[in-house]
Length: 420
Image (tube, rainbow, N blue to C red; front, side, top):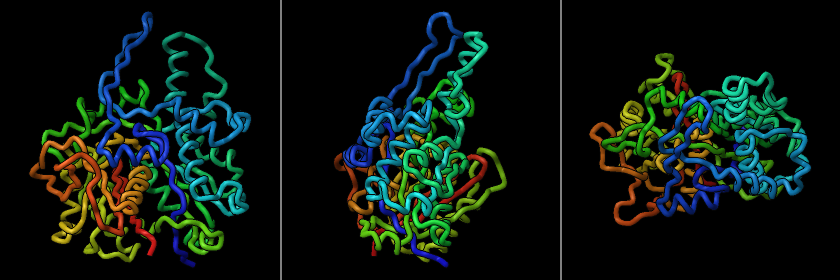
């Protein structure tokens, strides 16, 4: 059995806004979410400081949106303490399910799967626990510390709110987590294991502990994210979630769903080479596998959503792989790098970029690559740049290629297309 897998609902949360509508308005206007973030230790605590760019979610707006989507605050009580990791996933997930018209549908109970990609667990909850133990010398932590901080919590919380009893779990593969979640969800539907899948990613790593650890890696920019640009300095951390509702085509048609597109291809590979440095051969392998799976030749013009972190090492390797795969036909395609707007959402990034890419196809407009200072010699790509006036760049593509290349050499590429 191999069933066609279609897309029927999108939801997202990031520094750009709460929901797809807010997110797209900012992107189409050429606006970004990266802002200075400064925090210092309160008096009497061990000295620490956060000072750098970040793309933060409006936590209060996110919580209000979730409460409005749920309808009754009492329905959230069984979930216990919600780390921002789950708050983001629930808000984006409920938006996607509502957009798909599936809230309360009987197929949710047994024939629906949940696959959420997360790069790390509940960082805020763990920070609070460690602060009590090590900074305040307290002997106990909050009793909800483990349930709230588990990396699997977002999937469990979505299942509880939606009453889903099908396969439910989290996939963790660093920055490729949500790409793997979407791709494996596609295979579950293709094989007949599920009729519907709620898949995507969530991340909430803008905490003192996470920030300090990422800073130590040496890949963080001190100004902003400039993918494929000269004078780029590195990545900028963001946070948020993006969720997609996938269905078998026959299931979606039987209930009269509005079909937004198709998840047509999925390719993966492992570099098996280095924990932080990308490998061109591994990247090319994943891209080729995705095209073969989709049955779409690389010569077909496409919107290519890059991993595009803005780091000195990633961008030229990804650019070289893209050039090697697409060759001269690349000039008929359009390349975007939306981390320049929403930052690097780690485990949620791939799903966010896939949602943005599919929305761009539907609207015939590509969100511009922001903060660009001119082409770097080793990163020459046909980028969507708002050179004449700020805002989206017109496109006429029906195919999306969405790249995700994670630490540890874990690669995943998704190919989507508009309905035929």
